[in-house]
Image (cartoon, rainbow, N blue to C red; front, side):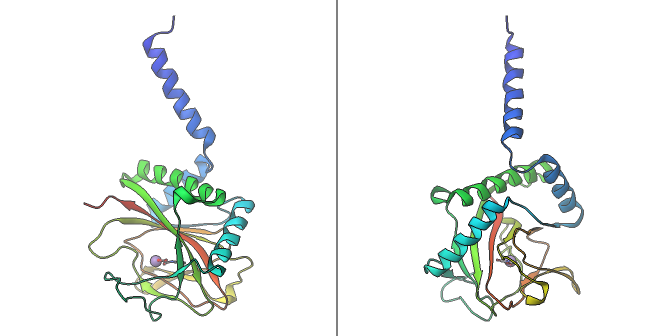
Length: 225
Ligand code: OGA
Ligand code: MN
């Protein structure tokens, strides 16, 4: 006869097994990433996704822009009339999980795995992920800023996945991440590279690039009080 205890144990084991079996991101990848964020507050990882998905996301970003479905990004707390080319020149398209392509769904699943790991490690209470494609026409930029709107705690962790095939380091378009006041690190936006950082800790800017620059950018959010 199976006891109540065996039954409960069975359910627990099944749950753990199914979670690890269906995971896209490996445990060691997540463990290393979490460790590094704990140490420095940011990570840069190459080859984040399989080539098929990253190529599809790249195609989708191009098509959405070409078809006129991206909107000029806005700036400032008061968004009315606030989009200014002096601050940022990108166009964005927000992802909607209820209306996502297979490649977008795979990306969102990966970010969900990351969200669970971040919560387990840092007790951040992250409950939501918001993300958009971003398209910077050649020569455009995003001046030095923080992703966390002052006085608001929602955006905790910023993630930028790049979609630029064959981007060379002499083409500009770096993400300049300020480690301290006068120290920064320039990150080249090469396809399939992801940068993850604690939103409130790092001022950063997007340098002007010589050609169009695309990414999938997202934020893990905490519930608003
Ligand atoms: C942003 C941003 C960085 C990048 O959208 O807030 O800072 O490298 N993006 O695209
Ligand atoms: Mn930013």
